[in-house]
Image (cartoon, rainbow over all chains, first blue to last red; front, side):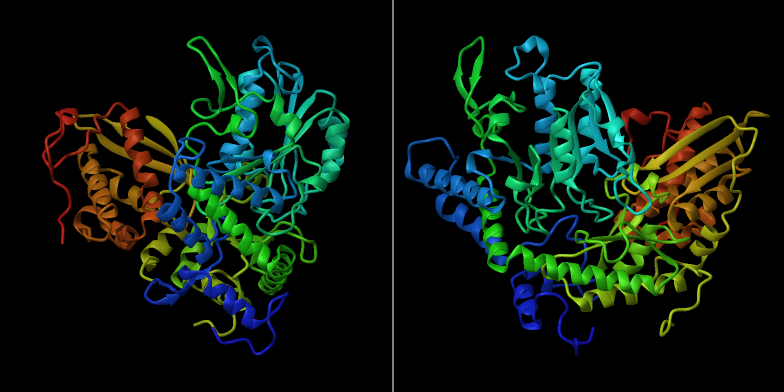
Length: 441
Length: 170
């Protein structure tokens, strides 16, 4: 990789990019026989800046205690740190802090909501019949969902007798809303969709869909894993009733996820996991629940990880998500332009020029994505290959698997060039009948 | 890169014995859920004259070059062979692939399978290479064959196991 002669695309200067990259210790390591690491898999998990690692370490070194328990000073400090982390994350998404529930990851957050419907069975004295599902009721998802926002709803339908329906994906990578009137009806009790597709990068019209869903009385659950790290998300204006996202894709630690829900809904929802610290009163016969968010945080929470995630959020805020979005958007455009010059590559998802998240997935016709990824890996370029936990979407795309490059704040145009250069070895190695890319032996 | 040996690329482009054929004694469908690779595989086992023989192995493999090529090599190595010998070949292939690069594999036993020695260094790809072979073992079992693996140590679960005759190590 040569240093760029032209100014860096997007919002950051070369100096800023260098400073950002210096915050990520892992970016200085090499892979596969000394090659620089070109990490284009932040959509799977992001790397962690030093500030996050330091915050976790400081928690364990100075305040470690089980939060919401104990009367000693460490317990007080740990609880304060944990609750301060909640406030930081709440502010980041424009929510009051008591609407933020910590989970272990986004999958657990989505299951928490799905099980609220299951646990609000009619025989169980539900506080709110919006959460009671049964035969004749419908759950609406989309064909582009990550398994984490599909399988819990399939299982909910199976447990309750409700019917699962889905919005198909069009050839342009956008949701095909032409049949929405028949899919989203008075029977729909809940609609779950991704804010940004983890494969296609498509940004779904959440506000518009939420308005339609609310008009028929359905609740709206949004998988925000691929939006919160890449574009400003404000729950006050998004229109959703719940959003779920993971910490580890947001430059935070693994083992921490977030569910945001409207207070009035969290208040009437039955709990998912039960046990210690989520109770109000326990007798041998039965128990009552603490108010949200504690009602949904059974057991000793991952406090150090919550503190680490708050550090990640502060680190992001210091740069600004709008600038990160502009930076990543420029890199996405540069990659799409490069792929356009390679007719043997088929990009899935919205065409160039349409706003998307930080991911670009593509198919090299005639070569399996696993093989593409292996060739890229050999050049030190880390991408994700496979169905990216979105198997039904891949069937709809008529692709067994795709190769996905996903960007982060520290990504560079040199890394886009490295990806394209490595990609040009694919037709050579696999003997594709294409014009040999220039400069490839 | 040493992973994509010419032999592997040849087999993946023109897989031997590919396509699903009749007759067969069992058909199985195996998938690799992490990447979506799949193989539908049929075996025809005959027991004329006492010894069980793999009369035919046919398959429809959808997946990466490693998994397709591996099924092709499998077909080459086991068609027409006694089941007992085929199982030894499977075990030798499995030993090589799961050795993390320590076992080179014996061409006498696994034939073109030796081209897959480099796969063992890429843990994520070992399942790709084993997909067809695992499916084959399953299909043999469903054809009524005893597929207990030869083991180097005595296991109460494999009392019927044959003595170890896996491929040479190097």
